[in-house]
Image 1 (tube, helix red, strand yellow):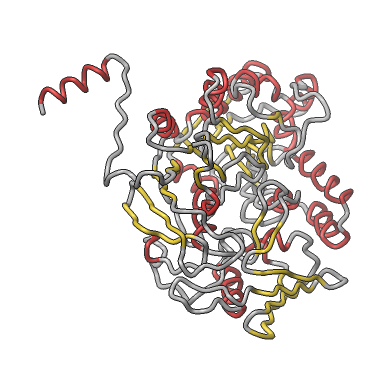
Image 2 (tube, rainbow, N blue to C red):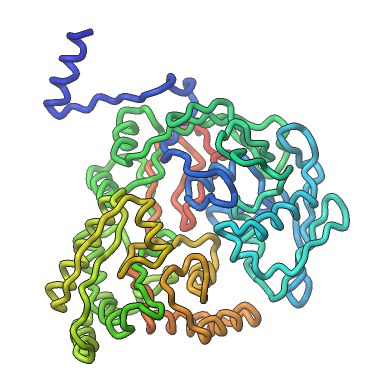
Length: 492
């Protein structure tokens, strides 16, 4: 044993990587293995991370799902749905064959209970359901949703895996162990090895629209670099979290399996903008001084699109810095205060972006700007309490509609976190919801950017690394991965 340990140490000293997977043995031969971060929360009232939502989408069947390629809602628990002429009444017809893991039927009443539960308990997505005025269940397979105002994206919103039917009122801690969850989706937990691996298998009672193609194993890996090394050593078959610098190296080396495409998300900075917030002219000057093109090229390795807007779309104008405009605004102010950028220490590439911005603002505007990196939980707590000057954020669209971004900055919205409130902005979004006016949405975004409670930096990219021959995982704007569709194809 001593010889083996000494040999391993010598290899490590020489830069040789020894792949080690701690915990129980590997997944059975032939079962696809996907590297994902450790499970955060599967409680639908708390789940918001992409990886947790993917797992919920495997264990549960929501009313609808989003097709990864078309980005449109398709039938799931609801076989079809209709909308009345004023857009305020939606009728969903549920699959009468839908069953829970224990074999009992899934009913419209349980779906209504799930939606009501979210609204009463105040989940992270409860703002999306604020327009619901009432729910009816004429029979066990028909759900009628009455809206106070039109919500054109309702079918896409209800595709979110957190909006699931409620089998029964869950007890405290009921979501802690994935193996104990009573689901109605295409997959169920075959084995759970905490902090190591989660094995999924086809749910025998599932007869819905998207049956599982076979078992899948999720290897719980915190560090993206470790996930990459496990992929290169053929211990995992797909990596769903790739920092841009790693993706660039893989692209340069021609590594097979790199899947890249535009994402439906925006990296941004929130600025404290309430009654005791930063002066609007200072906020605007900071935004004007950002050279987004240089940042994306020099810091992010050219894999992200510079963002002049909150809603993702290609920049129609130059994304360089307007230092003349920024300095003119600063000249109107008394001596600006010292500023600190709050960023989570868990993602080094995001710290690098913050350091780049702080350096440019110091050099180009003469401002005193420092970077405060903090543990992720502390950074989120401070942001929620408004204890920051600037705070790094990443807003990912939950469904394919601009409102998923713009509604986040309504007055008092849970995702706002800036203290900014503007009645004119809220009114424009209400107008857009009522009339489906694209002009009102554009005007609302222009108003938001002019007030500058946020600074858009770049739009996200969807970066996956997938073993050739593995089907069911392809880049798409919403970064949807349906674990039920993952399997080996003919070319493994």
